Image (cartoon, rainbow, N blue to C red; front, side, top):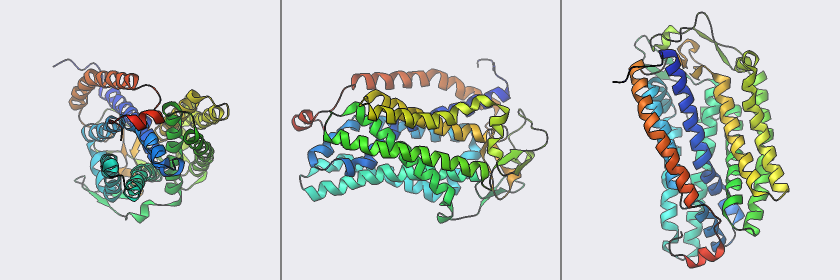
Length: 383
């Protein structure tokens, strides 16, 4: 066994960053797949146009959704308390996401099995569900995490969850969900700007991208206003032990309105994240107006990075705050696996994550180029 060169505090920080990287990686890759699926029925009017849009993601969507599995696995191994409480509490929401994600590959595979227009239209709407529902639910889940989730822990660390599926859809959570949808629709439009031929379909996609960019800016600002002046937020109290045992009941925390802004006053460099959340859609709008395709995708990617980073940096060191029992909130310092477990996993990640990134980069390089109507008509390998 290699000697552990990082102390427990540093190891916890590294894994907090790695979880953020995995979530952003999922949103950057599978995010544009979800966005493309969401706008598919609205930007493509004929079967040929819809095949053009579908095949823009047809070669990469399966690999992209692996980031979702990696994120879930990493949370399970590095933050077992977070995994156990969030996946059980958000069970019905996760079921909706998984059902939609299961529907998506079925739609990809079965759509072209019959030439009947009604048959294909049904599967096109299934692709819409497979894109829209996960985008909405992921945003709603993050909105609930920011407001605090209704769980409590007893002396044996057994969790009790209070609430129902409908309780998850509070006004702020819905704003977060709509922000997620608009952000990924913009990202999907950015991807289509790079991947399909210039023509009416791309023009419609860019019009949807324009609306999504404007909606992203407005919803991000509205969400920020809720965070600043809404009746939620959490902060740690008393002495914070960063290298102690993983026991949430040893932590002291309280609910405090506006507390999610504390980190920005203590660490002004963190303002880069929300600035990117606003700047990204503006860059995408600039690209759409100037008919420059690369800035659209760059801007949508920056919007994704900035928005997700804003949530993580605002909440640090909280990961899953409790609205029922703030003292039981899960943080970077009290909810991780053991020092040895984190170290062994870090060795594995250091070996395999670069390989995954290199392979992903190679795949995108090989598949680089625009899908054309002529290819859709002539290639038997296309959906």
